[in-house]
Length: 118
Image (cartoon, rainbow, N blue to C red; front, side, top):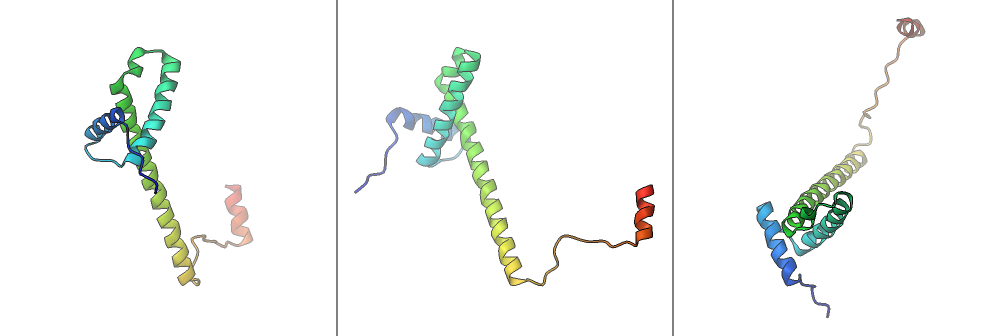
């Protein structure tokens, strides 16, 4: 029987710090994913700038908070798009005689030439 992987003690403290910064709780999975992104971002920033402050724990906590927010917003946006797409499919399946949102405006050949010459 597989056990749920637990967060290590130092990471648990970091998770609490991030939750305090966010003002809400997050799942272990959300924390792990955000921490992974934050560590890569931290390494990238340090490689470019070589500022020792980038390697401090509080800086990683802020980067992790930023990643949690970014990942949550991405998930929300993707879910919203999926729901919209499913709704459109349901609507088009149930109402096949509905007009499309493409409008064709017809004009006489004379009007067309007139509009082009302006």
